[in-house]
Length: 230
Ligand code: SAM
Image 1 (cartoon, protein in one colour):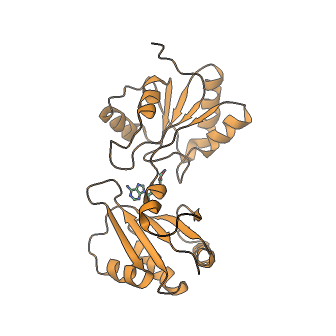
Image 2: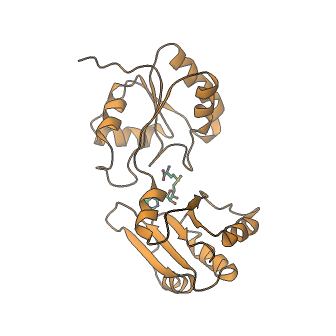
Image 3: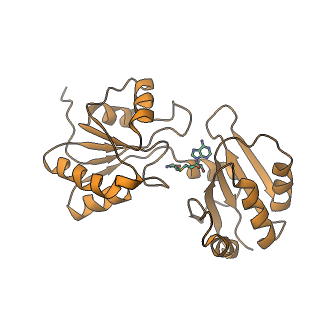
């Protein structure tokens, strides 16, 4: 069997918690590619070990060296190497590094092979019970500058809005939304997806706000799904 991969940039989603959520194709590509570019070589090594994948070469590719690394990776592909891009969890590029290398690949006429796979927002929206026929994904809200304007814009949308938020800011986010959105508007918080303590907190803004104010353990990162304005 020929085990080599055609030179290209392979975008490979990895699990968001449950190790079983990786495709056969993703495992094959990670085994066969010449280079795996990851955010952090230590966490990637752990994941690859659990999946029984021995990387030929693992290189780091993260926010602060993204531009420089993107050019290096593209040069490697030009010399015939296959490069797989992974992130800490889920799909690269989605609130994760990767956009720069995709742009470079397109500019250099390099083939991009994007694999379907795990992503927290898609997993959450389909089980949220909030309309998924039209939605907009916003990634993380800004922490400080522009946060208020950002949330006000989201509050005015007439389609579902999807965001990511950390456990440290989730109560604050609910308070802020509570001030600008009608209390009966539906919201769903999804946390620890695919893990043992997976939880969906569904209800009106007022109900969900009260629920999480009284909840002591808010571990895990969140996907926030807000119903559009009627
Ligand atoms: N690239 C990833 C994806 O495809 O979903 C997202 C990476 S972003 C840095 C991490 C954020 O995704 C977390 O802060 C959280 O909002 C969301 N997330 C990732 N895994 C999750 C999970 N298992 N449960 C809930 N949210 C999760």
